[in-house]
Length: 115
Length: 113
Image (cartoon, rainbow over all chains, first blue to last red; front, top):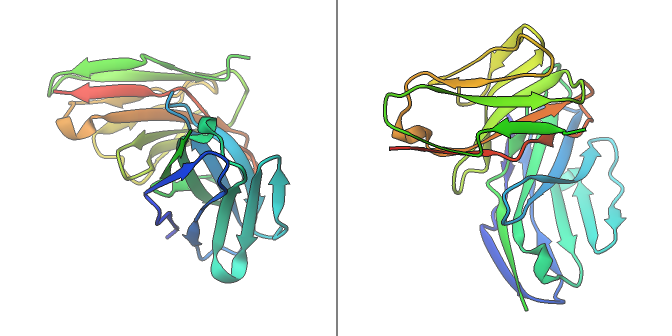
């Protein structure tokens, strides 16, 4: 069985602070895919990044960066110089390479960026 | 492209009533799925389909039915609504490649009284 744990239920930071959202996963598969989604107050789910299990390179996209470490089964997400518009619920998710792709989501982290 | 569309956006039902949540996609995606989102629990998979005529159960299938007669449509039926089914429902679609991004619809907020 797969499992994704986001231990941080809520995080509050002041604008321009850096913040890291933690994600720890469990899977028996050797090939799997990790995702981060953002859910702003409007409710839609916005895709942020996908990473496969064979690519451990960290990735940076503007103020966003992701740190994938297979040794600790973690896929953490850092926002640099946070902004009020970053306030949202962030979900980490996992899927395997089987014929039916089923996303297993973490419970989400509510990030509030205060002005 | 409209992407993934869901109707209705909001719905209130009484216990025991039945209804169908509609989901359609115009991206010719093979995979479609339904998730429910409850506070503090993230999204959980209800049912999914790998192509027209093929459906299977996810993590929380009880009380729900699905069918997939076309590639585009994947309706979710509540047979006899219960208060425990009060939730936000998301439909998603993707290509068959496991690396492919899942595209989510805007969600349906359902309240069962």
